[in-house]
Image (cartoon, rainbow, N blue to C red; front, side, top):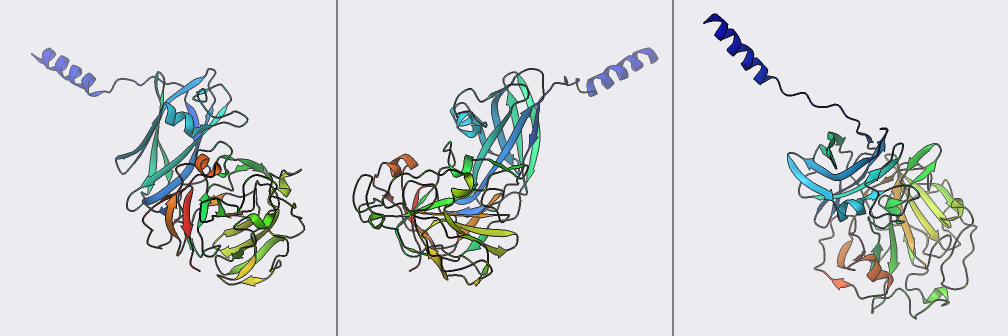
Length: 367
């Protein structure tokens, strides 16, 4: 009887011990910059990146990335959506990036929208082609976006960006000063639209700069601050046509950087020659600091605007911002539709509370 009891106890103990999980190589996963919530028209946007490096001796294949918060699934990227989310330096986006060779790194560009209050942290599960590669990889949610004033007046303005565009601001990583960063993570290009939706009064290349609806528009300080950097020595071309540059330092054209406090710097790029402020000047929110121009790298006159965490156009991490008083009145179906000069689709105007304009949206600022 005693032997039977001992055997039964041993069997019960064995049943309570979970089976051993095979040890296998996975990815080294990092989140270089924490997700920071920013209000958008339909919730809170969280844009950030997972860096996945393969230290195994064989390729690792990503089948899916699952994203959860507070016990709820926020996203599952697989198939075509996974292909769009992945990027690797020097490689065109598309199918094939999910297979990561030994020593390679792939970046998963995540762009989520959550309803209500943002979570404290986000968890990630990396599913491989033949098993789990990583589980419960957490990213702590950072500080919320700063609310700022409008950088321009009136409208309508196209707020152009595309989180999935291969060489868009969101996907361009700069390794400056020994560290890889994404300064344009939340950057927006603003182009003024005419009554028919186009950005110029005529068609085709070679038009004078004055044909641009936005050329010369006053550019405004979005907050009180100090001008920490400026450049005003870049000449404009005589006509509207794509412009290249010889060095990375020239890409901004004429620009202004304002220290707006809290470790945030507002950048205004491609400005018209003849800035209204100098380095060291104190500015007030709404003050005219320059004019929209066509200097540096670009295809037509526009204002490039972003906020970053350091006084460097390229050696800084892009930070989110919400613009007070902006009203979204429409949107283009895609960035391609905008580029082809299509008509934008009207939307019920937003309420004017601080938001980051949606991708390829059409907005009005207070006059």
